Length: 152
Image 1 (cartoon, rainbow, N blue to C red):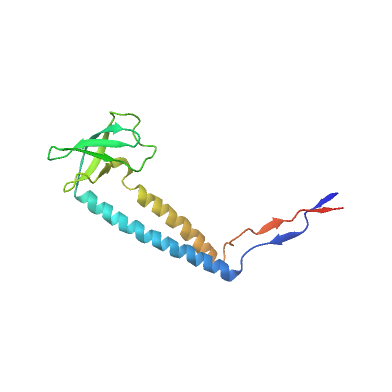
Image 2 (cartoon, rainbow, N blue to C red):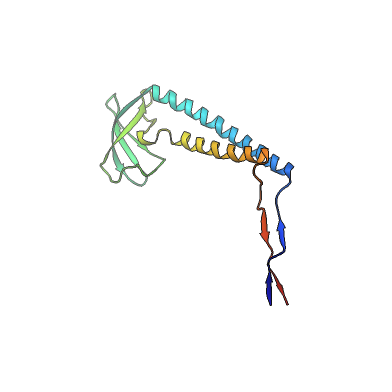
């Protein structure tokens, strides 16, 4: 019994299919770009009309933060996005930003631009591969697969 790996088969897509995949990636990147710009403009408008204050962690799961607004009322909100820069214990002081007109619209200041950063990374990756496929610098699909056979 002997293994024969000399029979190689290729499964690369055709040039037309590669161009279509590249165009689809670029189209998807343009949708992400539109979302990133829109959410960035909304975030900028929020920042222009907001106040920064100190808040206190009340609960860790879910992460609940309370702070005192300019009008003297205590506001509590649940922080949805969690990352490594988050506080580690109940009672810890954190920086909070909230809208003057609506103190319930608040978030921690350490992750203000996370969505836009993720969007920019996705746009860069999708655009790179989209252009590479569109121009023929890359090929979609596995190029070579080895067929292993057994000879008797």
